[in-house]
Image (cartoon, rainbow, N blue to C red; front, side, top):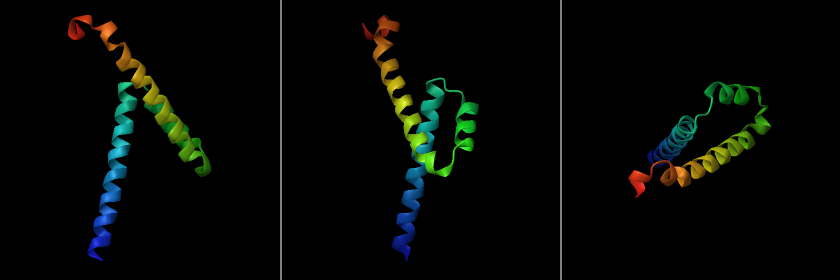
Length: 79
């Protein structure tokens, strides 16, 4: 039983970590958190996972674009 609780704790920790990363990416990309909360609250459970996947995909693409543009924005740092 102790091993089962260890597995459950690890799964919960990973879920919390992924949630924190998703929120961090949202803040870094300038996302409006009220819109995120409204979207998640208004979505039926069947669409919840798909909406989260779409949101994370868009945030990932925006972050990639932002990182790719960093050298042009800050040439002194990337000389």
